[in-house]
Amino acid sequence: MCHYEDTIWSEPTESHVLDINTAATAGIITMGIGYAQLEELCAAVSIPCMSEKTYIDRRDTLVDDFLQTAMQSMKMAGEEENRLAIESNETINGIPYITVVVDGSWMKRSYGSVYDSSSGVGAIIGYRTGKVLFVGIRNKYCALCDMAEHRGLKARKHKCYKNFDHNASSTKMESDAIVEGFQSSLEMHGVIYKILIADGDSSVYNSIRHNAPYREMNVVVQKIECTNHLLRNLCKKLKAVARTTAPKTMHRKRDFVQLRKVVDNNILEIRKEVLRLATVRRRGTQAQHKKALELQKDILNIPSHIFGEHKRCRERGVYRDLCNNVNNYVPSLKHCGLFEKIDSVIRFLST
Image (cartoon, rainbow, N blue to C red):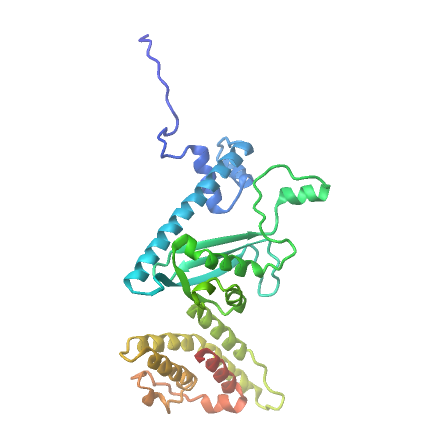
């Protein structure tokens, strides 16, 4: 009757607020699922779903936005690492150098034996800030390219993410991506990745040494083993010792089984003791190389300490009231050969 007309929007119209389709697509991407799962979810709650074409359009736009945001974030992290290195006077010919942590993964689990994933990623993280400095993605497969190849046709124009040789080993994905990050460190962040913290996989470090990204500055990248990986491998090897079968010459196999249980029950205690000793030595006032030497001696004494023989604990001076073991299993473990295996594992860790 008043002839009033207006338009009412069912969602916010501000430019900085995502529309419902874009927001739903962003959620689907971050969850790691796809359009089919979105359809199922919408059907379950009786909500009309966007078309697949709309989803693809929104996804392609978001991927570009995600990439741009990631690059900005990495650039800011690099600037922070650069500043901290300069403040600490850690420079080579005026160029700041930093310590980085690197690791990689595949989109398909290998279970320690089968490495045939079609996609992998390698990441470089600044040690001081804990922020991502570089991410490299490797893909061996593109559905459209593969379909066109099988049909003997030329693939239609599309955004192809295939950037790695299909016949190459998947294990090379990690090292290839990490090497790219080292080679682009000066261009991206203006810093040198001088010290590398990584797991025990030597292929990545060998690739970096082979490519020598800082050859012109006579800088050789140094590697430090990652503590988490060292301790994980320690526990893995000790568990293997705890599963050792009894020697055929041993008559009382029941005693051997009991000793294996003693080893198995103390694996975490050994791990905790390594971390405790490292913390104690780190707080000391000695020079760094002396701290490392003393820590090595402490670690070598761990098997005797944990299994009840405290002959050298007092001279180490880092145990105080922790030597309260009632039972001394060391003679028995030596008699059946288990102590030698444990000592070998600990010596490998101490080097």
